[in-house]
Length: 380
Image 1 (cartoon, rainbow, N blue to C red):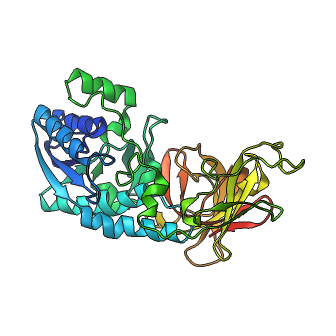
Image 2 (image 1 turned 180 degrees about the horizontal axis):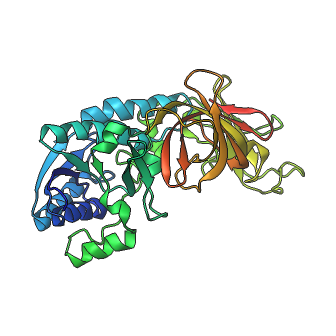
């Protein structure tokens, strides 16, 4: 029989964390809900829904029959996540704040708070799993069973101490089952739409938001032949592979597009911070957008140490299938290299490269540079 534990659940107001709390309560645990407020600036309800989310979380706690506490982590978030987010964009890279939020807030500040409340474990509504491997005496981070919802990519920076204290109950379920359970037990948010994006940006135009924090420095947009084909508003506002918002029409000259034709769409392909130039190419499969090799640093490994060099699988963005590659040490301490069998599209500095061994997430790091098929480095 499972031992009863005091478990603090991060209640976000969404259906996944609500069902997480209910599953643990049904299993006989003492469950306490915590609602984390991570953003205060411009929190007027138009773009950031935290006020409504707390109302939903409180309604869930009432139905399940558990206590809920409202905790403000906004100062921690601004110092540990948002400041880094801005630094990365200012440097021309494209960071992933969800990865940093999990490492610094949800599984650090929140975990510390839960332990002060006497919790033995914490739980969240992430689609992932934790398994203790008796052979290695290590806790392993596993993919969620629903391949369409797996969130291990965002959790790859969790360490042994964090994994040992964490539960992911809905990681054992498919999303359809979570929705069914929520409806059956009468949760008020059973049909609530999944949240997307980052709270502090919400549904507002991304460029509009960054404009409030970063200085614009316009410059030229050039094609692969060095012709100026437009103007950018500032390199921080573009990401590699971006198609919308470049403001470039099709070039009429024959042969202008590589693999795309006269009116093929344009994509942001590289950023030259030294000359403040955005390079754009025509055609989704242009060589400047394809990379077989990348380097990454700022690595975090769930086992506490990197895996042995050799074959593994990895992904360079969340919505991507694992791809076979070779893992090895890089050319500097703390730097690592991945060499892919198949070229990867729009590998972006600042994003995360995450390694897998089957269903086990090994960890990963922040992409520093990528080598394209044209053998020209795309970096910041």
